[in-house]
Image 1: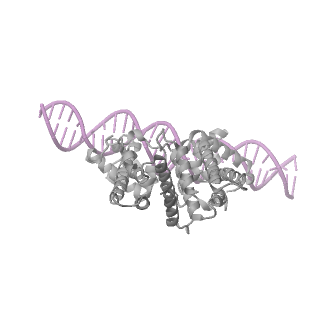
Image 2: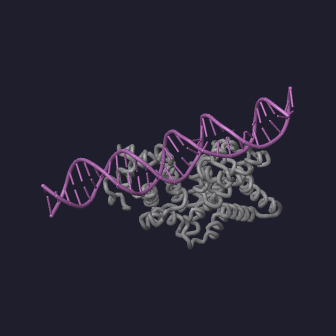
Amino acid sequence: MIEAPELRSPRVRDVVAAARVLLEREGPDGLTMRRVAARMGIRAPSLYKHVDSKEELEVLLMADAFRELGQQLHDAVGSLRNGGSRHKALTELARVYRRWALAHPHLYRLVTGGPLPRERLPQGLEAWTAEPVVMAAGGDPDRARALWAFAHGMTILELDGRFPPDADLHAAWSSGIAALS
Amino acid sequence: MIEAPELRSPRVRDVVAAARVLLEREGPDGLTMRRVAARMGIRAPSLYKHVDSKEELEVLLMADAFRELGQQLHDAVGSLRNGGSRHKALTELARVYRRWALAHPHLYRLVTGGPLPRERLPQGLEAWTAEPVVMAAGGDPDRARALWAFAHGMTILELDGRFPPDADLHAAWSSGIAALS
DNA sequence: CGCCTAGGCTAACGCCGTTAGCCGACGGAG
DNA sequence: CTCCGTCGGCTAACGGCGTTAGCCTAGGCG
């Protein structure tokens, strides 16, 4: 519907806020049109006065998530722009990326899981979010993609509990970052 | 319920076969108890005579997927056991991994997406599947995890169409493998 | 012959996303 | 002041989902 949060009508912002609380607190199964409505003290069909579909609501959540994660990544590279080695920049970027994902696991999954409805997202948002990674890779797009794949793989596998409980994930991150620096 | 395919009753095998066709052909939304039943010429409730729940049916599919992918990976390292460099082994392993995932995208997503019901999977199956990766990493578990994360990241991002259409994925794979070798 | 079990069936429950159609409140125009 | 349109609620309902309860029939076996 509308892209930047400031351009959303107040009521739409209410809907997105309610949806976000539900998603973050209870995961995707908790994100239901009826539950979102209940949180606002209204009934599910009324939501459709503000939002076209559940899918659009998810897109709005995704846009917010992209903006937040992107901001963190930009801040991270910004704070190191001058006089850090590539290795240092990557380490910091990875730290921030992982931290955000662990703080918002369901949002991270929403944003990275499954095909992305690119055309419905604010144009350029995805690229802007990814920018810091490309910069940290020294502009080499192949290396940037390898790096992103590594970071996403580490993150999603950790979120999904796929590593053994005694795995030293810090060591695995370091190993990968060292290799890809 | 029962683990190895040979230990499943014939009717259970029918159910899993029908489920697999649906999943592979139409994706997760097509995998419905009613549709599975319809494919077998029966009604959905009858499925529960053979399977406890949809979740168990998915676990059975996962077990098959693990076995198949694991077999491919074992074959790949086996064919190179003697006299290949580490780099060569990793390249071959990656090729086989990616090929299987692209051939069975929905199955790959089922197996790698979301938390894994480890306790319901045949014991040791997951470790056996991962074995070749650990071997190729020279036994270093941290490097093995970094490698797996990279491979999974590349694969799932490709399946989800997250790379630009003009991205040279072969180059990205090569770049990552070279770094992690 | 009688019984047990395997494997079908229908009906139904409570969820889901979504649509149709109704209605009251409210703000601005004549 | 009144009328009217829009905004944002509502109820009822549809079709689909996983799942349960309870029934029935056919076949094997003591």
